Image 1 (cartoon, rainbow, N blue to C red):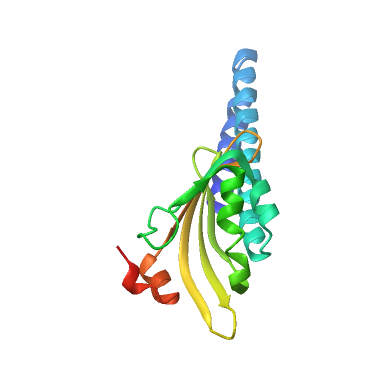
Image 2: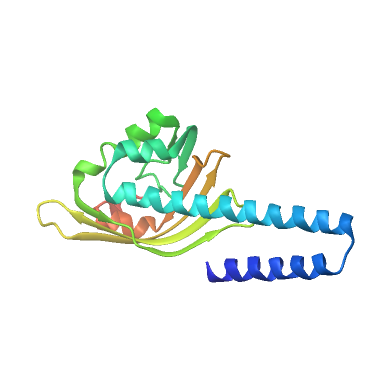
Length: 181
């Protein structure tokens, strides 16, 4: 986030310098540039907040909140499902059907964010986070590292969520190593 803010500050400083040394047309163009930068920064911050809200909804095991964060045609993709885990799903009904049976299997879920970035396209975010899931009946904790990308629509709803995790760690954690394809 610090690099992102530094980039914005440098750009705004350049705009101020341009404004002080140019005519009215130049000033109008510089103002437009400044407004565009501010708008993109607002969109990027909103989408980073939505990314964190998604992880919080998972921690709260709140399927309604998870579904509400997605656009009606939003997709969830697991590219490394390895034949063990669902490859993903689409739409509100699919998102609900994907997550609803997950939550009752665990006592607690934690997803602390290690890094989060708005991409060059402010409608995309990248997040690196840890997963710590407490299994029921004192069966211990399942832990994995996650990387995810989010794409958002103009309303700030998720249109694509791609979850990348280590399938070997997941299979081992759930006693499914023999099922990997």
